[in-house]
Length: 392
Image (cartoon, rainbow, N blue to C red; front, side, top):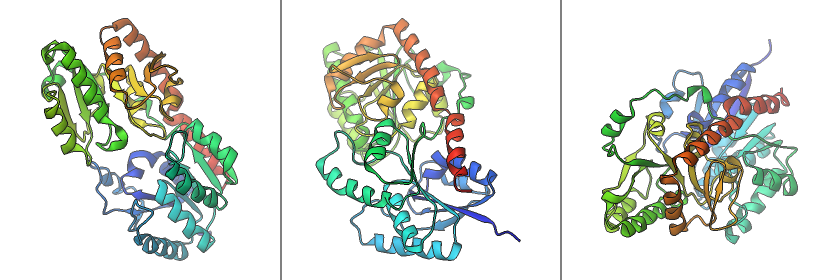
């Protein structure tokens, strides 16, 4: 009797698979694999992410991952993964996240487990990254790529670099993790939603979504709003209200900053939300000033809802917007792209340029809605079926 094929998914934090990888889980199941998931279930999970793993047949394995490559705890992680691979005899390993990718590939090499697939959701070494990132992360990835059967990249910059510098047997580009276009809806009462969120009915809604961490750069937008308020003399003359959805280590700092800069009356922190589909529908402009991304899902979701965008000129954002900035800010088909992610004045200028230009906002939003289809779940699944089929 033929034994059951087993696939192991590896990530550093447990929320990753329920947020981004359920399509791959379903594809592997269709191909006859029993799905195992090795991750650190003790790390905080946003909302009910981990509950989505219940009753779907995924076999869970606790691995005491740490995000830092410098902790001795990684020795324990390596040994845990080695033991898991020796006892379960996996037929395929697909790893994600930086430390998940490093430790899984080291353990797989030690146990001679193949094939191993690694999806890079944004290399730490990229154009504009610090020299420390290049000196540390690049040599590690170059070494591990020799023991990688399949390298997957989700943006064009990473793909070009991998093809030129790395040594995986196969290197493929896929358009992100896929957005489910069929779930996009436009059926809410916008007035009621604004009332629920305590947003003035006469104000346009500026939205940012993402963890409250340094990389997401929410502080720059808050400072740009403070500049606009100062020029407008008072917040009542501002034509917008800014909402931030997400949680993270900078929550208290950012709230204090809004008080310090006297903009707490026109900025709302909504925390982690499970009603983002509703919030997108009341939003007029999406602000995404991040310093670093692979291919940002939050930006893609906003585009799918037909929202014009003001974003930083970084890898990932360029892929989605099909543009880059030449000047301090430049118009593109889907919005305005800012050359320097921390250019406070440029974001303020961009907001002023768009906020009353209804025709241009509508045209940009429609372009974004159509552009998002290129990164749909169907497009990504087509690529992943082809990749997984190599190893059956």
